[in-house]
Length: 252
Image (cartoon, rainbow, N blue to C red):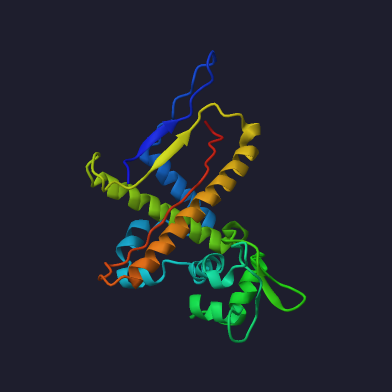
């Protein structure tokens, strides 16, 4: 865990162009951005303060996640991690749909017990995460769902990211800067990036970001399993979020 800080990309040696400073973002900027987002989502923000005060913490906790997103993620992770679902090269193997042994239905019942089998399969096929071979075996094609192909899922993903970012800020503000309890937060920033290079940057972030998140996901899964199997009493579990994003300010 480390304290938050900005990491500015270094400029080329000998460049004579004056470097642009990082634009200060005010509270009004953030509020305007949120109001614009709410308007885009069709959310009436006129009673925003009253709406928050009226929220029931119990019902709020039960409605935090988009109905099936987290559960489907658990299934895809298990298919990529559990040895009985892997081939000799360590890749997720095609599995039969039903029956005893390693079947898709058994995997679904274990990881997504509260979701109808037909609904789950339809969601995975629609997103392209799973296809059915000619011999009737299910084949997985991705480790995570492409959330922005589904508007409702994209909205929930964005709101969850905003909520997590605020929690990180609040936690770090309440911890001493030199305290090991600080949550990790880093930002790489460049004020003179060529806009024509953004597509290449997207590919780089996608490739390396996906590998990084999968590495963290594997590590957390192993630690969670070892904690359950250990004889010592397991501490209270918490939800942990690790996110990667790319932002482009075209109005600077």
